[in-house]
Amino acid sequence: MSFRVAVVGATGAVGREILKTLSERNFPISEIAAVASGRSAGSQVSFGEDRVLTVRNLDKFDFTGWDIALFSPGASVSAVHAPRAAAAGCVVIDNTSHFRMDPEIPLVVPEVNPEALKGFAKRNIIANPNCSTIQMVVALKPLHDKFRVKRVVVSTYQSVSGAGKEGMDELLANTKVHYVHDKNPPQIFQKDIAFNVIPQIDVFMEDGATKEEWKMAVETKKILDPSIAVMATCVRVPVFIGHAEAVHVEFENPITVNEARAALRHAPGVTVHDTREDGGYITPAESQGEDAVYVSRIRVDHTVPHGLAFWCVSDNLRKGAALNAVQIAEVLVAQNLLAKQAA
Image 1 (cartoon, helix red, strand yellow):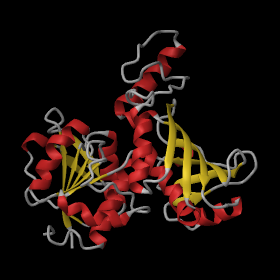
Image 2 (cartoon, helix red, strand yellow; image 1 turned 120 degrees about the vertical axis):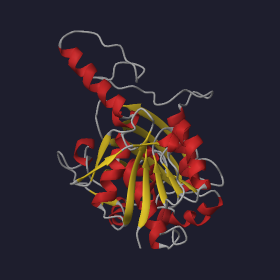
Image 3 (tube, helix red, strand yellow; image 1 turned 135 degrees about the vertical axis):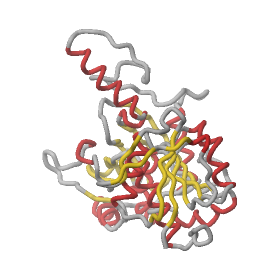
Image 4 (cartoon, one colour; image 1 turned 60 degrees about the horizontal axis):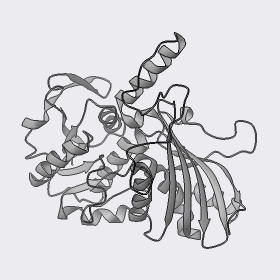
């Protein structure tokens, strides 16, 4: 059985990665459409090694008869067009933040809570979590199952691709002008990103947290367990692709480093690379183009009862966005949840 698939936001960094991932994983496609805003309509994007797709205008695109739409056009655009696609009978997997905390819409990481997909038909929309949340809950899931996570304190080191192509362009431009002693006022970020780190991602909220930090807390509760307390500090760093996180966890039950390593090594989506020597860990640059969430620097946190600390890294455009969305579609297919829509 094969499916008609639309990729919405196909000209953006995540949209292009979705097209690449669908091709690499041989998703069963009978027809593929690249869809984007009117200003991108008529341009071309690659699909696989030998196909080029002409981009269609989202405002004019009819979702009737299409089985799956993978959305990544921005929250305000998804707010308008995702319900329109869903009403036409097309199952929407949305990468934006707009639907994540809607109680009627599943928020899914396939390695963590695939059972949540059972409720998707109520709205015909499935939400993809925030990139920084995804990699953290993939690493936490096997530990929570065995030892019960009580509290998480996490500091993120998030690449500029989390802000899209424009963020990557700004890092490149800032780096260039730095060497010629020129000035290029920031447009995407709050301060110069080249040779700098910025402790702000998204807007500030009333309690002093940024919205990115709030997302990590509330999404972890919705995906993994509502009883888990999360304190996040989210930082933008001058890296093009790949997010890193320093995670400190307090468990309800005793845990050893060896027990943690064993649980993580057997967990889907996780690769443990943890040797206590120079370079015995994975960095964001090494995660680029890879599917796994890499866990390193596993050690006891002696400051709390039953504490553990670790470092995790993942390609935010792949597992943090495109891959997770495609994996959700794969679960829908495997569980025959798209059978009624299939051609």
